[in-house]
Image 1 (cartoon, rainbow, N blue to C red):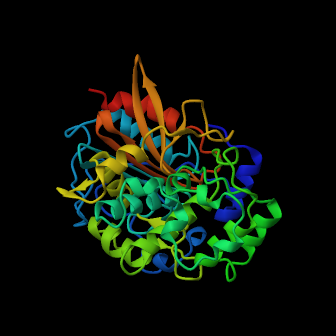
Image 2 (cartoon, rainbow, N blue to C red):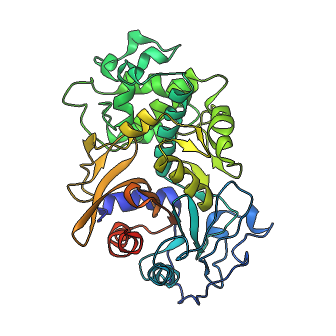
Length: 400
């Protein structure tokens, strides 16, 4: 997958990344916690973390009492030699700059590996994978009855109180939650307006930001409500979550979403009003990314409890609209509700794949037919080989 120059520059600004050459890393399979951050490292910013002196590759992950079931690669599934070879290639930066690669199969974590600045016990920035987690919050709110599947097609403004409708541009009432979740709300701004929104977080926050969107956009039309990858839709969706759940969206994430999966070591930046960012800004550990993938592959169930609406997941991971930006890959790349879906082949067989994708190479990859979940973290700006590797290595390694 190729990312155009402009988009790569945006990622550089967002992640504050400086590249340097990295010597080939020594690799061995180990079973101790050599990739665990020290107390001092836990206080460091991401780019301050020292590179691991040695890659951590474990084909029999430890039980860390974090609600993840663990197993052994090969014994519990997967071609051990193929998968370990891939992990070694990651450790030697053959495919880019990545921090971790974890693989679960049939609800068991079978591979846990860390490289570069990856650490077992540190949240890793997720970038735009945050959008997929925002979508999952909607699924949780539906499961708890705070909104319904039918509400997805209601005007988004009907959920938000305190807005001045008299100042809206024409067509705002056409925007539904469905539009917000599919990157089709129809909001259109000049580059100068976007920079103004980003550069004044004290002014544009919470409902004030929504009011500004609805006042300053060009009129919303059927033509403008076409796919455009921007952060406006996820921001609107997070405002809806904040409006419909008891308490606040921040409390909802802690108690009703992450808390249900025993995810406690996380970060989620807010917009200065206390509202979590809907489009970026979260950080979770690689093992917790696996949990989120397992939640999706099990139709919203976690250890027997229905956490997310299964009806919502089915729609959220469907091919609703083509992902048509030129950096988003081949023609068979589609967008659902802030989740990507595509089709990959291995040999003569094809597989549907669902992806939560964040800049820098951060991905949760879900392959339902093979019951496989992958979690990948990194700071690779090009990140164009990952799904090719899934086709060439992961699919054959776990094919029945």
